[in-house]
Image 1 (cartoon, rainbow, N blue to C red):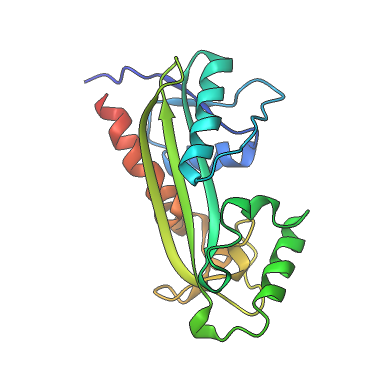
Image 2: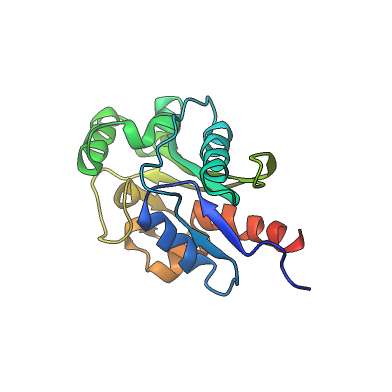
Length: 195
């Protein structure tokens, strides 16, 4: 059966996210594209799903295509789920975000440093209507110092006990099968392929 969706606008202005998504679903015949330059919708939702919808609907509106967006965050148990929705705005740079997180957890024992990466994706039709939402999560804990050179964001301090590595110590191939984004995207692609 031929897929009726040929092209999807990704609700991001981040080319790295586009590359990561293409890599995760490299066998798909759907083309993912970035919205026109200047794409920067106001993310004022109160949940990952609301923010994903805002970005996907805006991508559909400006492109006339199906839209797909994700909202991702790191939720730390000892910080009552922070930085959560504000993970990307927790501090000005990736390095400062990690430093701030480690400072906040300075006297927190290992057993209370549990955390999870959450990724919620929303698919919108060309009219901007929400068609499907999918969430992926991966659990681990926050280390006391960064380790690993791969990935980005909080990956160097997010340790996955079942693998014995931080997210930044995983190869791209490993990350693309078990990351929170992959765990949201792969079922989402199954859904899209059945439309």
